[in-house]
Length: 117
Image (cartoon, rainbow, N blue to C red; front, side, top):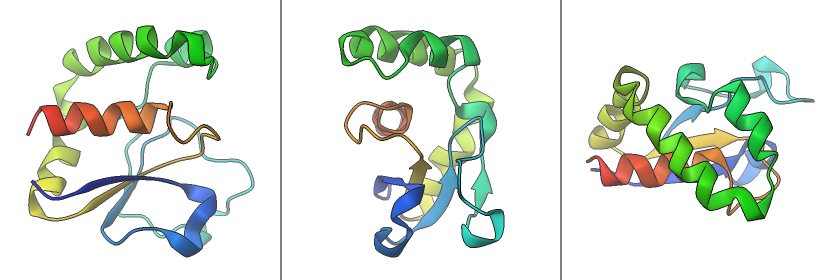
C-alpha cells in the first residue's frame, strides 16, 4: 500500500504528491471549487453529521470519536474501499479543512485505511 497523507485544503501550496481526495461532508469555506485540484470528493466516507457535531473538535472527545467513527466506517465499506484501492496504486492525500491537524476525521480515516490494507 502506498503512502496515505493528511493535509489541509488551505495549504494548497505545500500539498504532498499523490491522488487528492476531499474527505469532508461539506465543502470547505472560502475555497473555490476550481482552485482545488481533486481526484475525488468522497462525502460518504466522512463522519455522520450527528457524530461530527457531537465531537465538535473537542480534544477530550477524541478517543471516543475515533471509536464511533471506526464503527461507522466498519458499517460502510463501500465508502472507504475506493480510497484504500487508490492507496494501493500509489500515494494518496486525504484533504480536510480541520484546524486541529492531529485530531480530525481525516487522521482517523488514514489510520483506519492503514489498518485495513
